[in-house]
Length: 229
Length: 372
Picture 1 (cartoon, chains in turn brown, orange):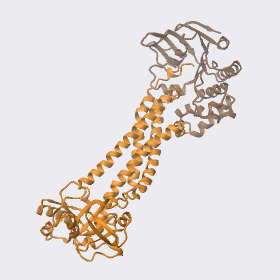
Picture 2 (cartoon, rainbow over the protein chains, first blue to last red; picture 1 turned 180 degrees about the horizontal axis):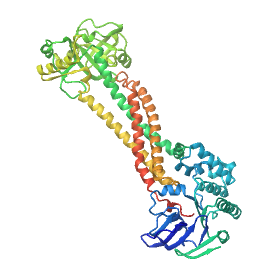
Picture 3 (spheres, chains in turn brown, purple; picture 1 turned 180 degrees about the vertical axis):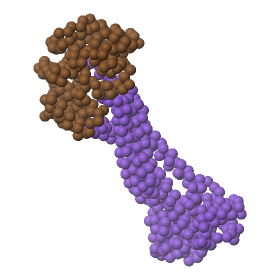
Picture 4 (cartoon, chains in turn cyan, green; picture 1 turned 135 degrees about the vertical axis):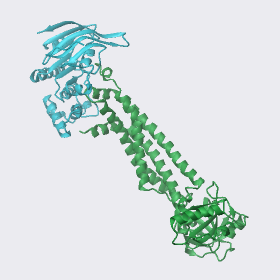
């Protein structure tokens, strides 16, 4: 195992991920390093492996081979991947993935069960976060009563619940109309810039990718270009 | 919002299914309460009945049926001389159909024996002598048979007259048709045959001495069995059968309950695969997911248990008031039995939740959350 370089937040070497006993090769050897505070866009055609890569970064999945380190700790060998997901990572999905039987405020509180916060602290923090995303008037609404843009804002508030260092967003505006997509994306950018979080964002929208500090272009399970601005 | 809110929300997700599952568990638990409560009540009723007529030891033939086999009345003379015996009373007890009632206790007692002493006349009179063709009825028996003083009553082939209605101080006594021993022996054509001897001991006799006395009786007359009142029913094979059947049926009901809850919880895990994967993605541990499912199923058990105990308790009261069995059983619904039933229900919930909980914790979040 190659030792990770000290300054990197995330570092991958020769990362592969195969499915179906090797018949499907989603990642065919990926190398990169992401520093703290970076805003990285991953672009490429459908099926190029960008979502698979994002899931590996979030410890939702394990690589077939290669190494992947987060702050010098090997993610595939992480002793407690749930704690990593709860405290270090915030996920924002294309399909929002809110829980339908919980209100906006309750959805934001869900990740906080893995922390020491009391019930009242959880409620307060959820209120603050929903205020931050402009939904303080929608606390007790169920997802079915919210618009697409509002749902994604709730999901963004949820991703920030435990103050993660790393935000992983998978096509966060893919299910939204252009007006909503625009305002949600502005919100994501402001959160990244104001709070200095590391952000890895999968998209195939070139205008969105254009606003990231760095673009990794993928094709057939490999990184084919790495543009920094 | 607390973890408990999450659990409740899970159950509330499909109210109809949760309701049907609750109905399933509660019917099972109601069966436990009803069957076990009735068999215990039956046992207790006989015990109280025996004590009420001043009996400490019952001597009867070794036999398997609910009423013991007949034996010769002379047995009494062989044991009457043993120490500590204050009084004896020969009996012939049958459980048989009398007129409209399918199950009636016929209790024929030696004329002048102590078993007559605790009967308190409510109306009418006692038979004049051993051979008067008359019977007295316990209060409940009179009610069930719809008899009043002076009415005829058909016992086997003989028509007797109801001359008195009595209060016996116990359910079994109140539910019996009581007549003199020679009369019943004559009716069924079995002179000198009895199937039980009630023995009362002298007041100062200790529990130890009573035990010793039963041993001596069995030594002296090997064909009979002498047991203290409290042991009487636990030695009765017929009663043991009743008890085994009530627990057996209950167990079956519980098993059906387990399968019902397990099915529901498995369905809920399959249905909520996506939600569970979201929970895993936002950092919930597999342990917390398992706890969520287990609490849900334990809660189903608790609610089902409480509802089941209520249904069982009410049902058994209604049942014991029906004419067919009125007076035969007074269900014994002790707090211990009701508590045990709820505990069983919670255990049913937890056991049924184990496999679904394990399944839920094995879900892989990455596939369910692929974009789209």
